[in-house]
Image (tube, rainbow, N blue to C red; front, top):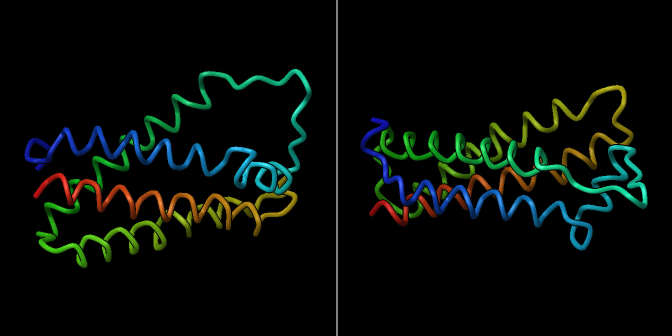
Length: 137
C-alpha cells in the first residue's frame, strides 16, 4: 500500500499542513493566546530553534503518509468521503489527543491550549486529506 500512494500529493500536503499549523500559531493569529495558555512568556531576546520547524515538518509528513494510506485502504472515491475521513481523523484523533495531553499540571489554561492547537490539527488534517485526495484522482 505504501508504494501505491501519490508521493507528490504527500509532499504538497505535508508542506501545506505544516505551513497552515505554523501560521495558525504565529502571534498575529492565535500565537499570543497559545503562549498565554501554556504560561510561556517570550523573552525579548528569544529566537526560534530549528527543532521548532523540523519536528512539526516530520510529524506532518508522517500524518500525511498515514492519511494517504487510509484514503487508499478505505477506497475513498468522492470529495464528501474525503472530507468525512479528514474530519473524523482530524477531530476524532488529533483534537482529542491534543485536549488529553493539554491537561497536564504545568499547563496554565489547558482548554484554551486544547482549543487552539486541537483546532489547528483538526483543520490541518482535514485540509491535507482533501489535498491528497484531490491530487490522487
